[in-house]
Amino acid sequence: MTLFPADLDPELYERLITSGGGALTRKMGIEFSELGAERSVARMPVEGNTQVIGLLHGGAHVVLGESLGSISSAIHAGAGRYAVGIEINATHSRSVTAGWVTGTCTALVLGRTLATHEIVIRDEEGRRLSTVRMTNMLRDR
Image 1 (cartoon, helix red, strand yellow):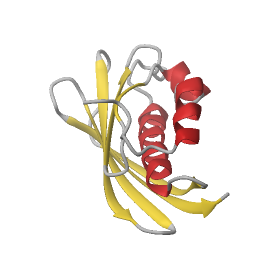
Image 2 (cartoon, helix red, strand yellow; image 1 turned 180 degrees about the vertical axis):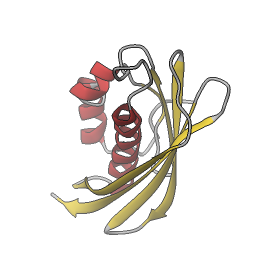
Image 3 (tube, rainbow, N blue to C red; image 1 turned 30 degrees about the vertical axis):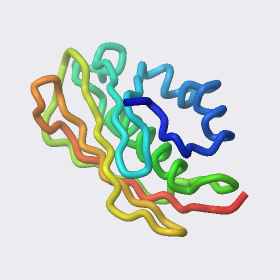
Image 4 (cartoon, rainbow, N blue to C red; image 1 turned 45 degrees about the vertical axis):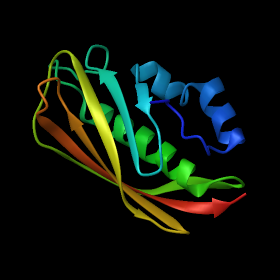
């Protein structure tokens, strides 16, 4: 499997390649393994992304989720369009203190003006840590 879908907008491809998904994504250590409108997957290290008592920061869960949801929505939007996040929420179900977490982003709605994705974040044992839901508005350039 290739990282990018074959029909990816060349301008978006260039932005993803040159930015690595953005400065915050790089700073958090997020690594993308699959990108598409319907499904995207990435992982992130716990180390370096913890809060004061050593747990993976709740905001780090949201950064991983928003990174996946935003890129998936931008892929769906297509050439000459872009995605803007208008709503995000997260439910944290379990904590983690070490290793890597993996986010799997699945499309719930892929419309002409809105795209909604659910991102499930799991630990290395496959346990659900959090669920993030994000809606993006799709706009013409």
